[in-house]
Image 1 (spheres, rainbow, N blue to C red):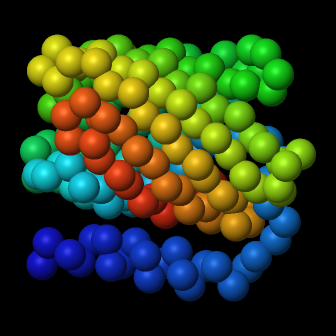
Image 2: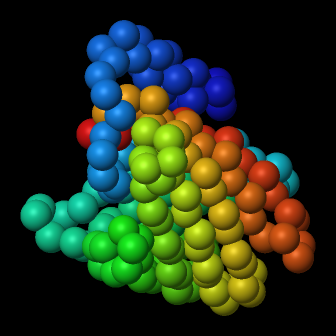
Amino acid sequence: MKHILPIITLTTLAAAASAQSAAPAGLIYNRVTVSQNTSGSTNRIISVANLIGGSNVLVTLAQVGNQGGDINVGYVFKNVTNGIDATVGITSGTTDGVNVNLRRSLSEVYAGLELGVGYSHAENSGNEWSYEVSYNINKQFSVAFGASDFQNANAKSVAVRFNY
């Protein structure tokens, strides 16, 4: 029973993949992410991120393994320098802390390619750096490979995203 939600999500994503179109030119923030990582009890994360209205306020709700959920509220500073978007946020829930994420489209190198770097400080887990390479297959779907928490768990992750 615990595998039903990821299976349904991946099945829905696969069914919608037939409506392929060109990869988006800019960064997309409204998305649903299903990820699997190697960090023990928090190895499966399902999250929904959405910019509120027409603003740059980004709200992310995440179910972190069997530990409970997190809510992150951040502000996206678009095109801070050289096409890099910076998001500064606070998280509450299973992890309370602050974070900064930098994202940049690398479409000039390869259409649909993105790079992300993040830093977070949480009360219960200390400081953590994360890195991610993402590829937008089309406007709706992307896949990503990431790494984080190098000093402790040295976690690797794979994610599938539905952009809306």
